[in-house]
Amino acid sequence: MPPVKVPSIKVTPPGPRAREVIQRDAKYLATTTKTSPIVAKRAEGSVVEDVDGNTYIDFSSGIAVLNVGHSHPKVVEAVRKQAGELAHFAGTDFYYDIQTRLAERLSRIAPGKNAKKVFFANSGTEANEAAIKIARWHTRRGMFLAFLGAFHGRTMGALALTASRRVQRERFFPMMPGAVHVPYAYCYRCPYQLKYPSCDLYCANIIEDLYMKSVAPPADTAGIFVEPVQGEGGYVVPPPGWLSRVAKIAKDNDLLLIADEVQTGFGRTGKMFAVEHEGVVPDILTVAKALGGGLPIAAAVYDAALDFEVSGAHSNTFGGNPVACASAMATLDVIDGERLVANSERLGKRMAARLDEMKEKYDLIGDHRGLGLMRVTEFVSDPKTKRPDAKARAAILKDMYEHGVIALPCGDSGIRYIPPLNIPEELLDTGLDIVDACIGRAAT
Ligand SMILES: Cc1ncc(COP(=O)(O)O)c(C=O)c1O
Image 1 (cartoon, rainbow, N blue to C red):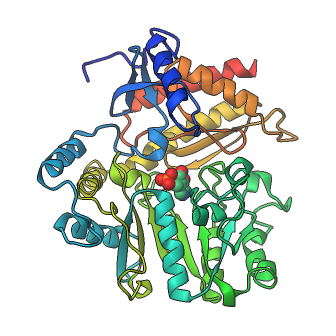
Image 2 (cartoon, rainbow, N blue to C red):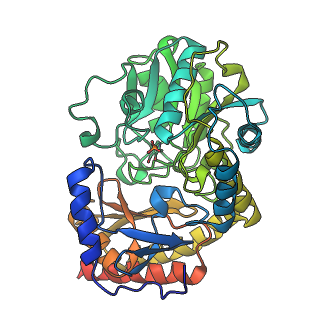
């Protein structure tokens, strides 16, 4: 990408070229979840250029995918080389070394010293479907516990565990049977109106004290699916001790703990995996998004003792595709080489200080929370009633992209801030100045 001024808005988005693409898109593409009319032409690092020549600071990372930034040269080089050598061979049915090496590496970096195995898939949803099958196959039990607000994907198994918003489930009943949802540890809106720490983690204890004694008998329940930080549900960070308590309850009742790190994985929260904040070792870890550095690849990394013992119980065509594996290996090299996990923690503190300042300044911000470079501000119409203000959120998001910052919504009224983990400090600060000004305009 030639040197460009960032951000630079020459024409209010969507400009004429963008509008033309958006019109054709509306005609031919399935309706999904489009939130902003940004039509990208190219991108590099933390900068996106649109088809009308506008440049933006990317606080969205392609939904938490581009932890190493857009088109990292090392990732691009690895992809080019692998595509020219061996682009596909069906890694479930044949062999090639790059897939084996990536599995070895994931087994090594996943929490826990236990022997592990890896099933490769192409999306977070598919990794979670694999986790469902591993857990059912091994335990011979059909039920799962999951959490309200969870997002685990949209196919019928993963969707049964998802409980983030009504529109995701409406008209799709019935899904996989046997999913039971428990309220998550959402302290800002505690469903039990309790206060941490005097609550003694009531929201975790209730799993054992009520749910397992009534609707989710351990004898029928394969495992507990949990996001260590709830993602689409609103970047909800549980209080210290909660995840460890949930892990203990799973263990005490012989249930598997399945940590969905599709969004939190690979340094996003300031640790390689978010479970490390609590020293928790899940039985199954699911990852996707950032693993491929922009190419689709996902994995369920699980205790080797849980493996399918028969050929054919589970498989796929594209999982562990050589080009995606090469991209993932290069991505992990960059995360290590550029010390991006530590960088996420460091820049996360810088970002947190600014967002805290904004929270003090604007009543519109009900809460700011997050770990590392995974942060959210939740907008409310009144800090006392905490009524979610989705209208203000929409106005701020629009104002942000019109001034050169791309971000995404999350939860009922939050905006999430998830730049690449190697975003230059000046760009981070400039982006936050713009966020501040936009919230300021909405607050007046
Ligand atoms: C925690 C979590 N799990 C699963 C998924 C589904 O991943 P994918 O969209 O790659 O299928 C997502 C997607 O946002 C996610 O955030």
